[in-house]
Amino acid sequence: MHSSWTLLMVLVAPCLSAAFAPHRQPLKPSSQLFATDDDTFEISVIMPPSDSGLQANLKFSPIVPGPSELIEVRYQLPFGLDVAPQDNLAVCTKDGAGGEKVGDVLRYTSQWSLGLPQGDGLVSTAAAFSGGVSWQCSLFDVMKARAWEEVVEALTSNVESRTDEVLLIFERPLEQ
Image (cartoon, rainbow, N blue to C red; front, side, top):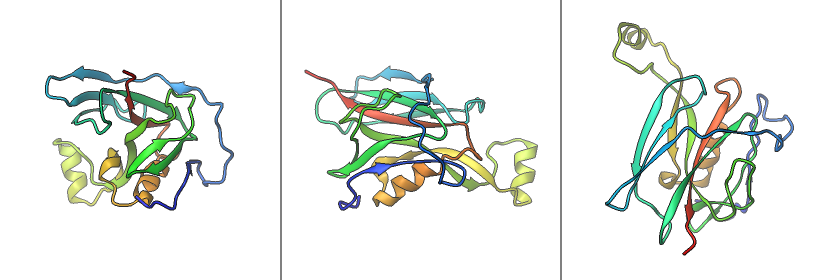
């Protein structure tokens, strides 16, 4: 991640010029966290938009030294988030209304990109052959970003014309 960036204030709006909306209420988390014996996290989350009904299952190793926990944060759009690159991590720099706290590490964010329809049914197969490209939501692994700009791009892909919420997964060190 690029070290000259000191703070990212993400403002997502249809024209990227609307006012910041910090007063918006955070949405209720949908995750189920599973403890594992092999020092990994397993989490199941409902994908944006809120009415998609799609679920993602993740299994990954912690990156914070010592014990840690996962924090799921959902915001309605537009949303505000204070994270900055520190030691190749996207670190929260200001407590947020969704429950993120200073020092939390952003691990995943919802991301929108153009792609072929998913599934194995007749409609998705026909759409794939006919070039039916549409917006698809996935989870962006912040730890795999090659540059800070990729994190910014993933966060700002969450716009009102594609979704009604953004999903953020943070890792928080536990106090010992």
